[in-house]
Image 1 (cartoon, rainbow, N blue to C red):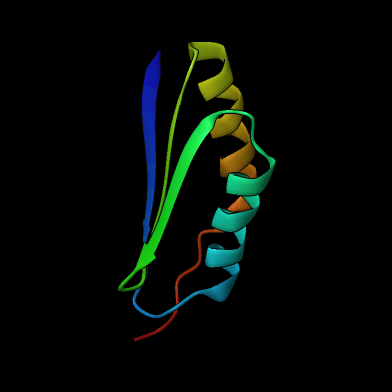
Image 2 (image 1 turned 90 degrees about the vertical axis):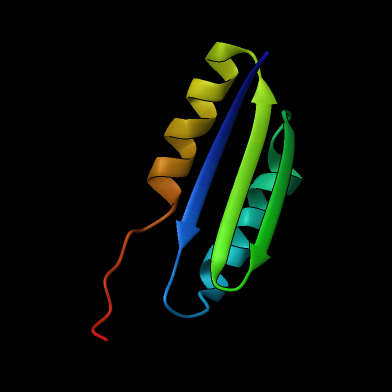
Length: 70
């Protein structure tokens, strides 16, 4: 089994990221844990290599990377 962790650190709260974390927790068949504290959103998953790769692909397409002016 492999472990992968995705971490998104933001300068302000991003409710959309929190909703995405909850979506992945509810819809994936892997062992997933999520966290959303202090503008830091985290998805951690355990699974077989192929499953982890598929999850990584779905996450990369779902989470938009944005830059806001300070």
